Length: 125
Image (cartoon, rainbow, N blue to C red; front, side, top):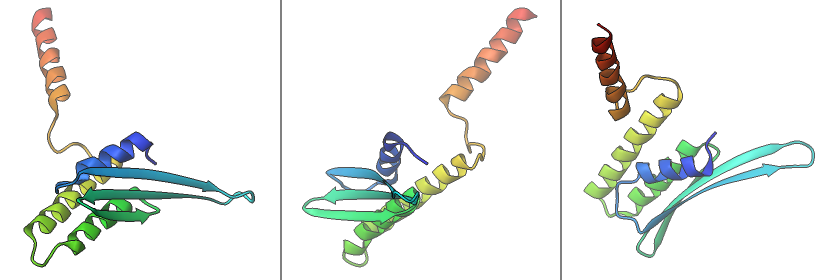
């Protein structure tokens, strides 16, 4: 589904808490009889603690890692709530873009192309 770089970028984008580093790993297993499986793992390292999440889906692995961080925080924790909400928002936006939904707001490149097309039409007239 993702390349290693794309998965690492998604792991980094989904995190909003304090982390020294993050690791994103994709493991492919192919048995001699043809069985194949892919596992995704994401981990965030905060201080001496490692918050790890694994799953067959990249979104599930990231959500589990963020939930592991939130579970390690003392209750109630604003930092944990913000980290979970931010990760949910980023994962939801990434999933909708992969499904082909239009962007909610046009980016810089779209605005440049729109402006350029207007200039070209004015020159022709």
